[in-house]
Image (cartoon, rainbow, N blue to C red; front, top):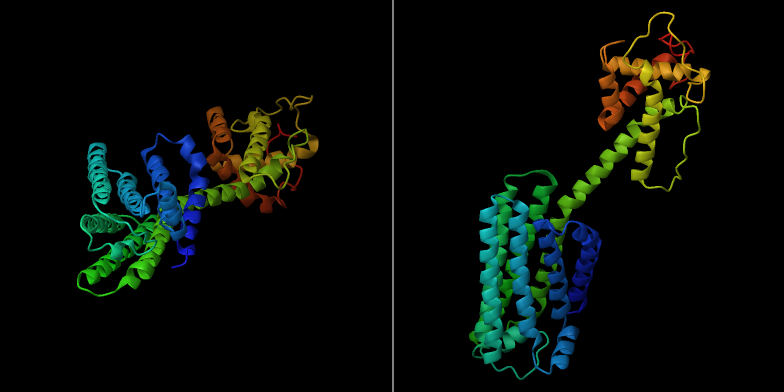
Length: 389
């Protein structure tokens, strides 16, 4: 079997892990983050050390023929336990119950790893086998037990993972359900890998040669299984990230009518943001510009001045005369959200300025009212309130 089937999944898993490193560093105390931080590197190690060229190099460096066999078996077993623990942590539930299940899983598979190493030490494997170790030594004392123990432990792990995914998928919807289905499908393929290996080993016990299943079919199923599981684990997180990004972009666009109106009110030039700036920076800049403009209008929001009251003070902070129509549009939009002129108090004004949702609602109101006034902020210069001029 080509080494690409081993090294390609290793590279993909390594890239996925590299993308998660910043989050792992920032949120290492999170049990779910720690679980992901263990599973991905173990997957990289499994495929890297299972590749025939790596197997040959490890055997040569250690001076022990077939040393890679127990090494790969141990790492695969540890990876199986890590995936189950990741699923238990991801699913949540009572802390004591989850912790007990995690410790039981770690203890059981830790004992399996010790047993695998001990059985290899007791056995005799003088002939180096790069791809068919399982079948070649399937009748050798102690090595036979090691191979069967490894395959049974892996089968139990994949079966447990599939059952957990199936149960949880019944309770959720959306991308999380899709991710669980993919993880479960990967578990089924992983079980197929184990069954293929057991069939080839069993065939050797009966004097038949089904080594092709073990050396070609089974590794292909293992690679596809890992790919599906990686996508399944990543899909909900990526989907949630895309949803948050879309929500931020939508809010940024919805703030445009209010921002275009307010920028005609402020008596200074707004800071220009380069078009290549990140969405977060542009959204923050737009929000700050709007809040600065609304603070200039705060005296005219939510309070109707007495007839013949004072005009806005002159000076650097005064509203520009040509901005009257734009200010009037904002005031009218504010009144439409608060039940009419004079219906809102100063607290409501401040809460609107401080609230992102409030700014979006006010911008939506400006967008609706602007066409009625002859355009976005370019209506008649007469303001609905005498105080704004």
